[in-house]
Image (cartoon, rainbow over all chains, first blue to last red; front, side, top):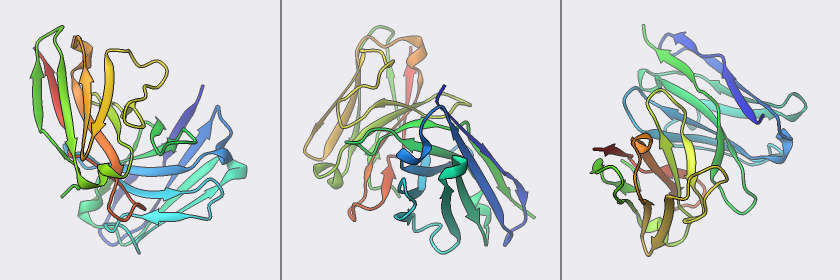
Length: 120
Length: 108
C-alpha cells in the first residue's frame, strides 16, 4: 500500500523550533517530488514547500521562506521540514504530499497530517 | 489572498449536477487539479491536468478548463460527495503552487 506518514508535531512556544518528518512506503521514494501543505484550523489549504526527487530544487512559500528548511533522505524514504522562528500563524495541520504523475504536478498521495500548535 | 478564486459554497440536490469554478489568470498557462476533502480527512485528488481522473475516482467527477476558468463537475451528485473542494495550480512566477480558497458542496 502506498502510504505517507508524518510525525514530529506538537506544541511549541512562539520563536521555537520543530522538525517534522514524513516517511513514504509502498513506492520508490526517490522517484517522486514531494511537497508540504498546511491547513490552519477551519481554514483552507496552503502550499508551503516543494522538493525535487533528488533534493536539488527546493522552493518555499513567501510565508515560510527563511524560517523553514525542507530536505530529504532518499536512503531512509524520508522528508524533513525544519521549522524555526515559529509564529502563532504557523499553527496548522501539516500534510506531506507526493507529486504522482510525470506529466503533472498534481498531488496524488497525502499523509494523514501532523498537528503543530504555536502558543505560549 | 489566493490567486485562484472559488465560490465559498454551493448546494446540489441528490442526483443532480453541480459545477464548481476556479478563476485565475495563471490558469491560462498551467494545469488545474482538484481535491476533495471530507471533515477530519486528508485531501484526495479527484481531477488532474484539467480533466483527467485518477484511477478509483468515480466517473461522475469530470473537469474542464477554458481560458482563465477551470471547472469541476459532479454529474449525479451522491450524499458521499458532500465535502470541501479545492482547485490547485501555479502562481504567476510558475515556481509556486497555489490553492483556491475552497468550495463547500452540500448535497440536499
